[in-house]
Length: 289
Image 1 (cartoon, rainbow, N blue to C red):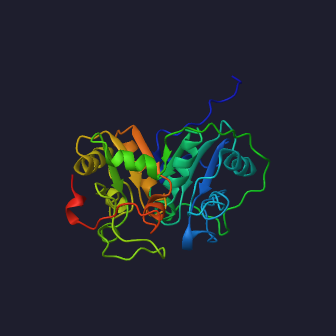
Image 2 (cartoon, helix red, strand yellow; image 1 turned 120 degrees about the vertical axis):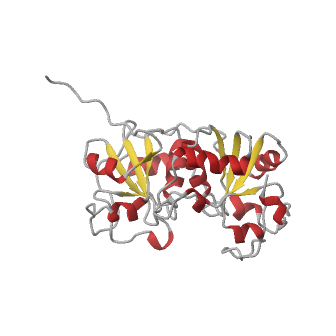
Image 3 (tube, rainbow, N blue to C red; image 1 turned 45 degrees about the horizontal axis):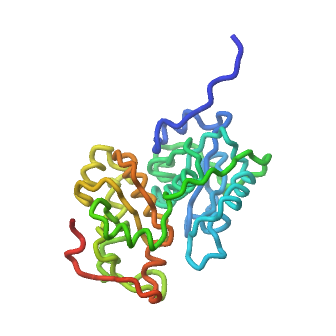
């Protein structure tokens, strides 16, 4: 019997190291390393992984804020340069475990690409399972891909939309930063930003979605976590320091069954600026619904 095999599809927004290991090297499968900071550019990768450089070309450096989403044309050009095709299957991971890979997943969804999943536990889970690695930085030198961006408005929002969401009783604004940063007792890592949080926002540190092993909790457990934070509100606006770990909340909320989600692209790097003087509070009672 001859014929072309059916294209590979991810089973959902999250895959295990076992799932990826069984399919690594299959035609059409693209693995992206979306590590940032100290983990970016380390000389170890899942075999064949390509760089999804959130600190570099996959942020808009003409914008005043870090990790700003590039324009659709610029994003598509980078994806084509990295060999991404319209019918590719994508798995993204990062060297920290589950930190910046969800940002890459969300950006691809923002640009209309859905056949993408995050590797649960990232590179630490991969190496803990004694999977093979290559001792070289993520790279790609193959042919140009056919990816075309189809932007979805509303998945990334600005301060004006967040201001409206804070006044909407049907919407919860969840802040993925640490409890200390949310309360204003821990200094912000970016100079010049005010401490505290948006009045009416709810603190849900992105690390609360993960177990001690670095893997995400089960969908049922995630649902309980989000319901404790958001109550019966079904629309969630997600924020963090610069729009990266807010996407971990977006991933967890998707697994928990939420569908009305938006990420604040500027996040606290925008809201916490001294000017314009948007409202900020450190009142602890704001942490609960």
